[in-house]
Image (cartoon, rainbow over all chains, first blue to last red; front, side, top):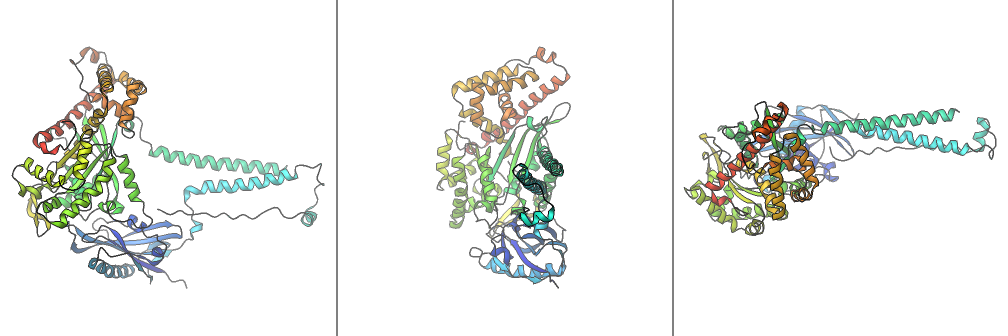
Length: 208
Length: 421
């Protein structure tokens, strides 16, 4: 059975340093593609326990859940430091588990502690996965192209088919120089198949 | 025969899919296009603030809006879209409540442009006179390296290049500490100015340096102008700042505007932390001036860049325009834009806020000479009178904005760092 995995992440400011991603899923750190977390996971209005979003990336959809918690610590400008801590899963998170959020917060706090001890020297930490309890809907990336690209891609496919048919027709369009059409069984024996299977790769761009 | 039918069907299908795609694209473009009867007739000025994290950009924005959202005795006020109003009110509640913390600072996810509409009332309705776009972003974008995959620093650089006015935000607390010979504060002040000067040296726009947390500098001197002189001297001693002022002072407007986003009796500096007083009174000071100065300064900046001949031709056109009926004036702008003087003016102003609406605003900024033309007005129908009233209103608002700036200069002569007085 396929076990759902979650990866913790943390976005926070320090006493002197501005907002940055301090902890990110290991596969995003390895792929140098964790910056988007900072753009997507922002502060939440008072009374909002958490927020769920799905982000489309090149490797497929990534679901993220995060909460916004005070730390009781202030920066050098007297502003309160807050933790935007949460977890990411492959797919769309339909029902986040409080246990998963708690696990992510625990990991985030440990990272934040290390960050506060050396803000200037701190670099993003890589978070390994943990077994998640949240309900996640996984949809293969190729099955969900961006809606705005469906029509031109479909048109292109149809156009390719049309061109193939056209070429085939033109090729057959010189009856005087060609033998008369034969029955199907004979055609198969004499002429190789002209239908070339085509594969359409739909690339899902980076960014939201 | 079957193949021909197949091809026809396929081609019809391709045509349908392509036309559906184009329709969808066109629909999206139409939704984002402004209403030609309203938005395009009002010039938009893009303002970008340059300030490090914690310098007080968000508090300034909040208090600026609070100060300008009702007309008071000015005759104009500003509005923002509903979602931005909600956000500004939320910040205001947090700032002004002495029992709560200061706002937590802007994150990258909150970077966006606030859209201020400068409004005034005719007898019939409230009409927009100008729009001011004000970019809100986290200050660390100016100094910290960007995480992989992010492009906001490039967006900010573009916004700075395309800005019609730049506002440099200088943290008053750092100025105070630097004045008190705190080496780290002086280093931060240097970093602050370094992050701005590079962009500003290349800019052709008016520049306003805003000293935030002005209330913390009260202890420097009782007299506000003397206090500003002290701050000015501190800044002039920082590498690069004096150079910027010297280079720009000939043909640019550079201001030094002290602001307090909370008032002089709201917060106190204790052990390096700014704390709200339990019974502090929220009374922002001068916060409206950086925004009020934008339109007059941009117009004046353009005028300063014109040669004598072009300027005389522009004034002549403005006087001629003042005698026209509104419909004629509307047509005249287009004709003027195509003439030599109009082209020179357009190229001086640059792209962005201008177009016909900006050109009309610039021409209307010259006060008409002579008596009010009663015969001209008597010949107008109701619609023309309403249009004429809107033009007069625009003149009054421009006059009001200039008046605010003149008051600042009269009260704080040290606030003008360069340009033609």
